[in-house]
Length: 215
Image (cartoon, rainbow, N blue to C red; front, side, top):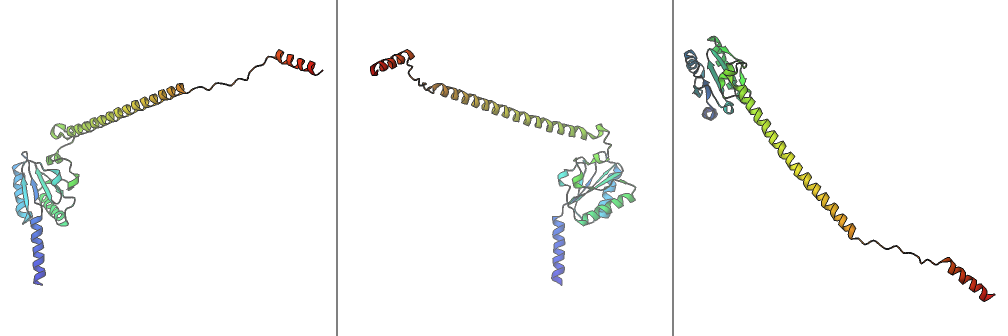
């Protein structure tokens, strides 16, 4: 029994060592109340869980999986749960959200890590119609324009390759036609056999001579 308990404790310790730290994010535009609330959550909710503080509002979206990310921004909050996170992390996100609600924070619906499309997490709280505040549309437009430009380059390359191939084919057909023509010119034309023509008056004279001979 003691061995089993020791093994379970060992597994829990290994899990804590290998577990990714949770992110608690504020931005330069976050209020002092946001920063204080972050500290309260870490003290009252996180407990022995590993965590990391981020102060510039930006997180690489490729590392949001298998952890809970909380961002506090001007009295608002958002929670991101890894798409492959275990149940324990989902529960932890719920506890953080309940704590923020109790402190009168406006908490957005929880997001999965694969639903976040930009590193600047403060954009979650900004109006998409406010392009000066967001700037995401410009980035997406540049990306689309670059993609279209690359497609045009590919299409032009394909067209050029097809044109070269067609020219080569035309030259091959033309060369083949010329060879066939030369070969046809070099082929001797057979002479037609003409039977010797005998004039009818000579034949008649021979017939008359024979008649006289045997008469």
